[in-house]
Image: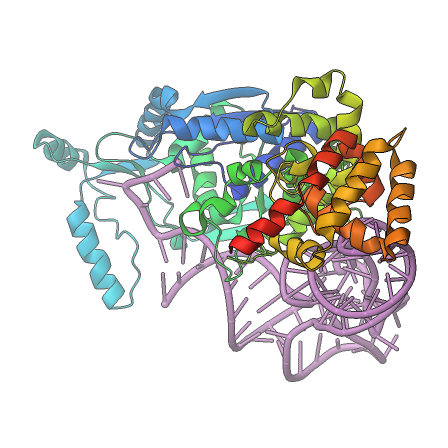
Length: 497
RNA sequence: GUCCCCAUCGUCUAGUCAGGUCCAGGACACCGGCCUUUCACGCCGGCAACACCGGUUCAAAUCCGGUUGGGGACGCCA
């Protein structure tokens, strides 16, 4: 059996978007599953729109996702000679011809056909020019494109799609498509096939938006006497309005980089993406890499387009809720050391990192992450909602401040009293702190909840959080005492307003 | 307009090929309850779908035909 070879061929005209990432992921999975090779090829023949930044963005995106490639990146422009040679071969073998029609003429004809609700395809004007006519035109310096000569007889092209089944298209429904521009540069349809033949690609897994390309490309494979690879067209990802998601109309929300910036766990994003149009046939939805590779098969790719459930300006969900749910799941179930590594990377970026977190404070650091992670959805939350554990410049949110602190002016005295008791404790831990808190509440004849919730607000800035006495021991006596003594400033701030 | 693809809860989907075990299962979201000093986690429960019409059959989400709806492509872009 020949080795499976698949490829991901992005055009570097923007960032890597989640549709592209999903395509890459499925190809990567198939390669892993079959012991094949995953090839990265940058299709940069569109010189005007290709940029180095975009190439780097794609490489970074794939690397971040953990979709390592086995070969490449190859650059399509480096194989221009192959593409031109192939075009010449097709002309020589009678599978293609030069067309001297001008763009203007063609446009005019198309407009007319549109108006008349007629067929808008190329009418074949140059299909049967004699060698003499061609020579004469070329001598006069009239520019020409190269068109593929689609068989004119009755019949059809067909192939067996791994997900869609047999796909067939009549020759008469395909126009003589252009394969080389008038400036001599070959087009995608041809380059792509030539590259796939050279790279010995065995399976082409791509979106259904390529289906009409596929029938034309099958014709190209046959004309170039190359074996036709296996095709698998995956469903598209649409937005709530059922439109194809694109960077142009949806912006950053479809960029892999966005999820990285938001604090997603790379594999969690992959896990979410693979479920858009694929499922294992069981109830399992969370997969380790190994499990997913094991479970994956082309046959279980769905035929139905899926909707990326993202509501713009939804205050509660910044992206598809299921994506967030999957990310949260990983966040609270992954080994804490792995979370620690991700938090480290992020903390370094936002200036919250302390080398002691890998030295004498390592145990504390990981235990604290473990304590607070249940409520979080992304890695970034550790520096936002979880900021009070790692820095002094955390903000106290207004809602809990109103509800738990300002509502009880006596806390101005009570909390410093509590701080004093904490300071005098021989040992400061969960048990002794709780005892001290409850004792004070009893003496003051108030509900412990008033002290507890007031403390929570002041110490963490948050309305919600882990058990209060776990928080106290995580924060440590010094910070607790100092912050509690500072309660007055919040009342002063309030008075000023 | 032409060609191609598709059609199950709000969303992701199982079930369709081999019709009965499906008055349709799971997940997310939502709602309620338990737990909790708070919030979350967790657990328990609830809401919620076979696009429509015909046909085949003892029996159809499943097979066939049509209708409707949605998507994609129709570039000297990739």
